[in-house]
Length: 109
Image (cartoon, rainbow, N blue to C red; front, side, top):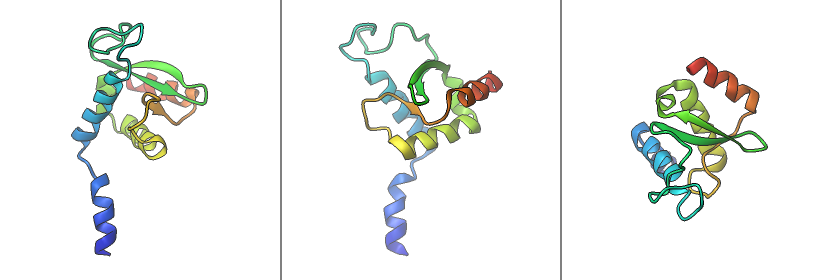
């Protein structure tokens, strides 16, 4: 039982730490690509927002950072971490159907 706890413990990062990792990862994806500024941030994403990719077609959505505080959106982020992890070059990919994502985000706005 002690071994199990030791294995799971590294996955129990604080919410604040996980959110910082997500934002750092999102902002570092565009370095040296057209459409990004000198800091590697997408030029079409307003301050206070970030990009996620949703669904099978990986449609791109720009969402406000304030969504990170909503439990419903946090559930989507946990699912994304479980399915894809955050250490990849695919951008922050949300594993749900687009219609579900649009419905959820419209309720959060």
